[in-house]
Length: 405
Ligand SMILES: [Zn+2]
Image (cartoon, rainbow, N blue to C red):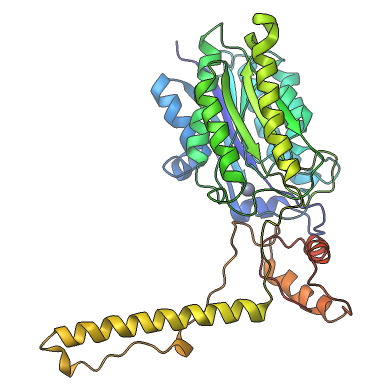
């Protein structure tokens, strides 16, 4: 008989400094799909549900997919929207626990963000897990995936045995991450000697520590170490290095190291293996703490950015001209060609956000307008890092182009 697994995707990165609440319509506008429709739209993409289903096919699971809901980062989720999104998940878990549709559940897989705030709750994911546990009990294996810009609460760790976060930023490993979580879940569902649980290491840091990239800078060696540790330790299933999400005024804000390991690590050899895992997580967390004053990015004024772009365009135009000239001189038929490369002044300049979330809210345009109005009221220098961070935080700007006063 096949194993029965409940799946759902419910993701939101909530900025508590953003006064625009996230309503159900914001999920509908971005992505709110149920059951088979969600699968048909998302199962062939780089999504968590695609990774869950990869593993489901491999092991012949019977999957009940409830919903796939995702809204643009913005303010706290309204209680009304939260209830509308959580209710179908709880209802499906309740029905399955009661034996509807083919026997009790063997496990649950949830794709979450880890930074969802509700208008009257600082831990949207923790609340969802608490409600699920009331239905399915404390023993049923639950695996969750997170975005590394999560503010992982102790409740999340306590109520989901397995946690795996993406290892890339910009995020490109959603499907791979989901496969990893699902494989650990499968092992947990099928082997008595697989008893995972997750603990976290946290230091009182506020700002994200990835600097917008995971392929360069200080995050790269940390993630490499995490991967190596996962591979080397037989009783470790996942190590996640999370940058946190600083635009949230909550007690659980900040970077975390999450380790999903086996209970046996605490039981055999006087717990030496577990002590080693704790020490490894602390080592990574302490490294973040040591680097807390290291500059992550250089912020340019608009004029400086434009100047750099023009220099780049000039160099590109010169290279194109050189290539065309070389091509013309080597071709006997090219003398009649009238085409010429664009001059640098005619080339467009595009300045893009270095990350994947320009603004942490749903209407960057609206806020840029507010920003322009606000900057006109400023009398002080906004170039200092502290001031700039406060400014960005005030408007919920994160990674967007800097406009100087
Ligand atoms: Zn993220």
